[in-house]
Amino acid sequence: MTRVWRRIAAHEWRIMRTDGLVWPLALLLATTVAWGLYSGLQSRTVVMAGITSAQSDESQRYSRLQEQLARRDAAIARGDSQIPADPRSASTLAGRTGSRAAVLPPTPTALLSVGQSDLLPSALRVSSEPREQMLAAAEIENPHRLLDGRFDLSFVVVYLLPLVVITLAFNLLAGEREHGTLALLLAQPVSLTQVVSAKVVVRFGFVLAVSLAMVGAGVLIAGLGEGPAGAGWRLAGWTVTVLVYVAFWFAVSLLMASRGWSSATTALATAAVWLAAVVVIPSLTNLIINATYPVPSRVELVQATREASDSASTRGSVLLAQFFEDHPEMAPVVAPGQPAAPNFAATRVAVASEVARMTEPVARRYDEQLARQQQAASWFKFLSPALLAREALDDFAGTGPHRHADFRAQVDRFHATWLEYFNPRIVQRAALASFDDVPAFTYTEESAGRVLGRAGTALTALALLAGLCGLVGLRRLRTYPLTHSI
Image (tube, rainbow, N blue to C red; front, top):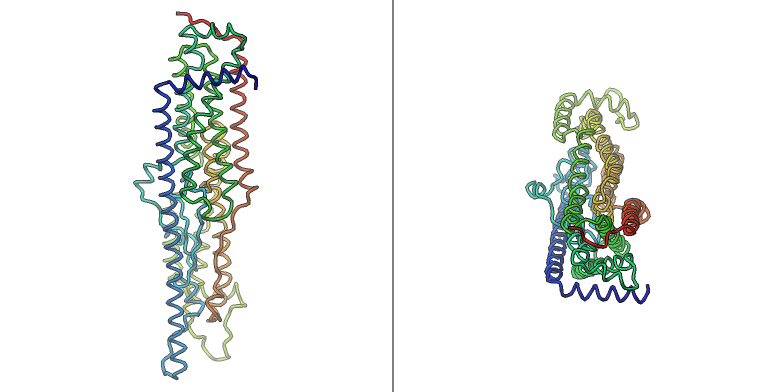
């Protein structure tokens, strides 16, 4: 960095400080950043309230079960003729009475981006009920709010921050040329590249200083150290994403400025690029993906589950006999000549297994189409810098679809483990030795390498786009017209 370049940058900063537009723009940017942080904090509070409610409900249910066990032990000690049922029975604990809460804790940086955390459930009750009923019972955010969308910090970064960049950089050279000062400036021992780079760096630093200062203050006030580990690298990755995204829009502004157009034409052209990259392409991408890979309606899945349940319930005894044929190790041992005692709990197990079998094709089709949509989205994102930035921001905030898909996969595995644990005990009318023997769910956080690998791909593509636009813009400066033709 030469002394001449530093003098140009200092001069540019003095000019910016006296510009009547800069400080109102900085205030507007700081206000939107603060509001985005507040909205993200409110969303995280709602998610935490739902998780706390699910965990509190589980704790209260098990406290009541402990009280029932204490009353039963007391009745046995007194020699009462009527002994209450054992609350540790497998049939009792496998259902909703003993269900476990499976929760996805928000990351410390979740306030930076709401992502899909207001749409996808962060708390599920796992029991012997079919998987589809478990998912259908999950509560989501107010539908009207989901329709409007969340104004969070990622929205500010992806949609509004480029407009701030365009406002500051549309007249990088056109303004100087239109006022007749560019030729005088270049009569000094400086190059056009030095002038432009100094202007860009000063504006770049100004935008980032305002944005990151507000973000830093917000996350400190909100308590960055709360929640799972990983706050440091997640915040660093989120910050790098903002840096690269802002750099891309300055590179686009430089490319547009190098065309030699007037200030008004340059502003309109850059705004058109923003409209296409941030609004048009993402909207078209969403329409194309939904049209190409339509996901079956959840109503269809719920209806199929209801019909399967009604059909299986009417064939309970037949299904139970077939269940024992498939699982002879669970069949009860009956003395010769003695009828088997009715086992209604075992019948429910057989019915639930049949319902899962009948609804599996619909559930599989839903999951497959959703996977195809996500695979298509992973390719279409390279068409828009906004999609690239949004994916990286949500990934580092821990509110994107990938982390929730990992949560769902862990819940599915836990549900399968739950059934494998309880079904034999239900059929055998067994009781658990202790409530502590009931399986519990613990979410295993994704590794940092896995998140960085996904986000790193988007960041690399975004950085390459920024570098390409910047290099083309700098090359075009060699033929930039120094005078304004009227």
